[in-house]
Image 1 (cartoon, rainbow, N blue to C red):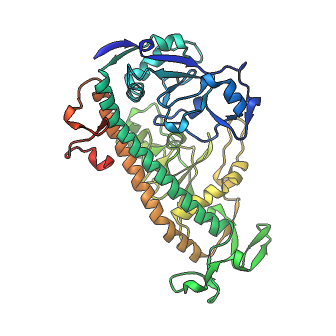
Image 2 (cartoon, rainbow, N blue to C red):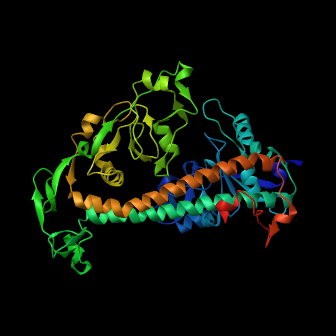
Image 3 (tube, rainbow, N blue to C red):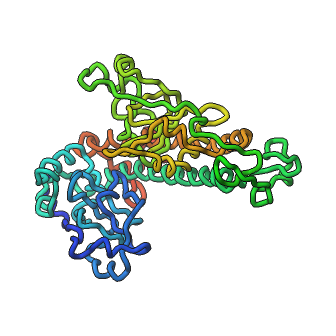
Length: 456
């Protein structure tokens, strides 16, 4: 291990300031700019990216990102950093960020990005930041950071192992995103466009008794639409109206007293907060949050235990996060959770709430923070389809839910394995042996390695 100052292996640069780039320069289509909000642990968040024109890209070309760069938050969460992949090459970074460009002859950029994710390094970054109210970094502070690194060959070996785990996580996420797109398309096609499969020969929604040649999409094939006075719109003939309350029991939550340490634990009854859901963005399912409650805590706050398959919906700070419970859970007061009741199912209720979220958010109220109450939810009207269509939809989408749940579980195991290996590989407790090196510098694991079941 060698002690090295960052300036000896890398160059730090702050992004363009307001005088160089203003929000008024943003365009609808162009070159993306990553900001602090887009920095993720294993990659950039690609949602809600601002864009600049090709002319501004040329003007700001010294701020273009290259594969292997590492982008830090310059203000606020100064311990946040993200590795730039091939996908983000040619993008720009904002003035609230610092780019670190590693000299590849002296160090492995991928290894350094993992080094920056060490808990001890993150703590050090928070300690060296300046500013009483808002922590901040500058290039001088970055340049003088001291690192303790193995030689370049070991760096590349370690980075290859950790990258294999992250690549598998990314692949699983891509598969889940494609599955999600399929499930949403089916829901929209059936329940928004009203083109659910209809057996016109038998005059009923298609089921296992239908001849495929008689099955066509309802509305676009001439299915009768009728005016519904309650909903003030046309719906398929035979469909009705109801309220969100019809989907199942709407259950709130509460918080046991923080003054009693006997009420909270790390291994008890899962207890979810809106913060847990914000940390879970990108996933559909959730098993537990940062804290569990004990039986005493549950009893003291009169918490309701909700079953697997409950749809958890944050009702304040903010309104609208959704997740499906994998096991029995409780929540704090920031939720209005739906326990589905037949004919409504977890799959249907999840997408129904997603579809109606703009209406739910519009019904939120409050001066300090906006919140939607259970009584308000019970007054929101909804379309009620044929029960049989909900059944057929569930049969189609349930295998997608199962696959997504399994992949999310696998990702949690992969992340736990990566986080367990990370400090031991970095401080030399675990070494990568030469006999595991194969191909063009890629690392193969021994046959008995527990990593093989994930990355093979």
